[in-house]
Length: 442
Image (cartoon, rainbow, N blue to C red; front, top):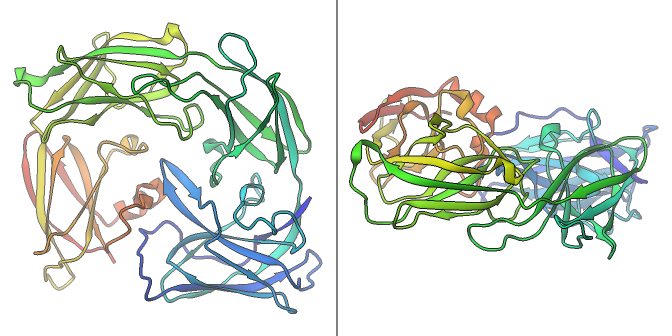
């Protein structure tokens, strides 16, 4: 059992678009005490950064900063970029403290004891006092078989369930024995998703897959049985709205994840390259998916997805078994996409030349991970913007200070709700060219 410190101090709001300013870093400081209130000397304190990525908050696989407490239990973590962090302390002689790049056992005990996030700004010093408390760790065991019923010894991963709302560190691997038995050791209390899979066979076919939910609370979990399936097949055809001519360039259809617990964690998704006869195929699909256009010639966008003539655009479709296969999918595309242009002004009406512009739909049902309605663009040298190939919808438009383009934290629904209150709302119709002037949100 490792002693883990959880944040007890007050924290700021989390989830603002991340601004990277290396010339002005932040500091977290505080004191680590025992459950009885005594200061803890020599505790190892880690700060691990949290970013919203692929539809959920994920924790870095290594510490952003590490420090040890002095004889009064005080610590100081310096040189941090603005952002969200988890601050964790371990006993200096614990296993986790000797492995400062491994955070699985530390970061996500089940609610209500989950670590509290802390948000810091550039140039800011934030105080976070921590209290050491023991966190139990348990074992998950079971057996995994492939679709043919034989022992499976390929990839088996454990991750906090997305439904739990827990931050997700990199997934934990299992020890797998030749007869298919497996064991996940040192698992703290929480709700988890287990996934077993084979790597995909080719670009259009994903591998065998099996998943299970497990709740760890108060003891070991034994006897988990997993058996993979070969998945479902999707066959369909691309059509063109209003008899538009076939463009030069290629279209690629992808089954985007619609449920992070029931689809592959990190393996690449299948890609359905549209052939010269406008047909495509996808194989080995598991879990809820949305059929989307991943690649298209310039100016072309998805208009409608139909199954048996029914409009299922932006709706999750359930896959997993051969009986759930579809052979009559129609993907309708159009070149009648819209373009938004304009500029951003400050409170005095002066044009601003450096900003990021965020576009997201007014309809909350369309705030799914990697939504086709999410966009962001940067200002050009003259402080103007242009974003093309927009689907018809009502949008919120928000101009914010420039942020790290690799960070999609602005797509966090909690952030979108806060931004929407002050964002500019605009209606985009098919084939329209809309000009707007937006204020900079401070």
